Image (cartoon, rainbow, N blue to C red):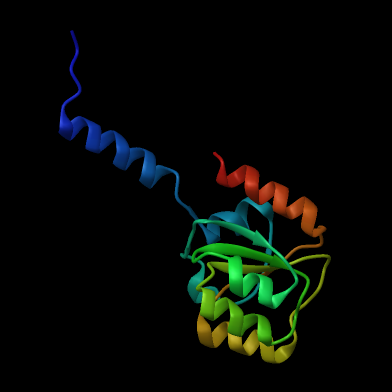
Length: 132
């Protein structure tokens, strides 16, 4: 009979936890995302994702460590991202950040990323990567 010791159990849990963490830099590499700014935060750990263009919705329901997918490009997204402590923001459909948004991303160290894909498509891809 093979018994699982507590230390073996803890090692197994730690292995599962630490090998399944995705960082923003992993997301950038695997999805070929553009990094507009906030490079200091590329090592941020991702806990999930949130897709919305309504700032009040993100303020109310996004979680710390989420990747926020949006088409909004104005400076106010950085205030919300900072408040909610998101891991990164992904701008969709080829949108580029406003200059003041980019400056704020660099000041806050929150990665501001971009893709030419639609929100639906990139959300699905991020979801699949986070499930691995």
